[in-house]
Image 1 (tube, rainbow, N blue to C red):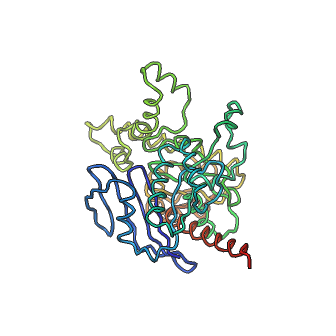
Image 2 (cartoon, one colour):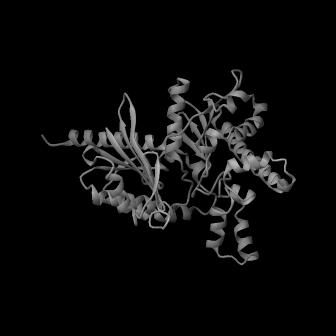
Image 3 (cartoon, rainbow, N blue to C red):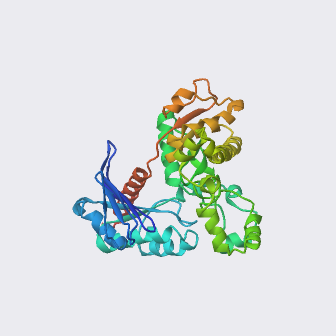
Length: 399
């Protein structure tokens, strides 16, 4: 089945055109349109980057479809960040789904409206092609209530749906499936560490999400590229009072100006790592900040791994994925060195080579590096959901 995968951001569209079958998965075309509606709009496709004048998502979809043979597209899969409590799996998009995604914008104001823009553009241009919404939050629908509830008055959960939802679900789901194949197990317990500019750690128990570090919003959990991660909520009111800031200003600080950027002045881990190794006296403060940031990040990750290991009871593997998880061997080493008293032992050479299995053969828990592929997961989910809908329609049809 040929699937067009669309991941719409507020000013960008990532896409992949994938042929999905049981025998193979073939990416036939992929690319990205960035800075839509702005002067610096660019298009990356077929190994080239060009400037463009695309004004909105509809024009962006039109451009993509000028390179993808429309008649061959069987289904379109969309990444949608927030499905709330309504959507626990991927769904065919209809007017009711569009309405609900719109309503859920209160829970994901930076993401759902952008995701919806891509959906509406495809609906207008290709009304005959079925579309599927694949929700980041859906994989975490299995988290038990004691893990997703916050200890605030219950009425706020009932009134506003304030609870842990978790994100990166598509990535964690993909990592679970790949880990099952790699370990040759039908059921697994793993701790999946998706580390990038946005990061989350997920405890997966018997193939189901059991807990995850991100919460009501993607700001929660470990420190990230520009997000603070967990912090004492009293800091918010303290900063508002001492710095005479509005809530929106504080929210921007915590989302856009914190994390690695807040500690070091950059959210590029390659730059931070280089600074940590510098012996130039002029860069002494940068070196101190870089080492502090890396130590903070590793410690954050370890705290979640430790607590999730206790909650799971038995752990088959700790898995690293995402841009940092797959490449920053020095962060992985800092994390796993903490776990040596638990019998988790790293093979330094394999780790530096970014091999798939980076733990020693005698390690109590396997440590893996598995590249994530959210676009492929979206394509598979879209194809499966569309196939199921056709089957159910056929099954319930009146002879």
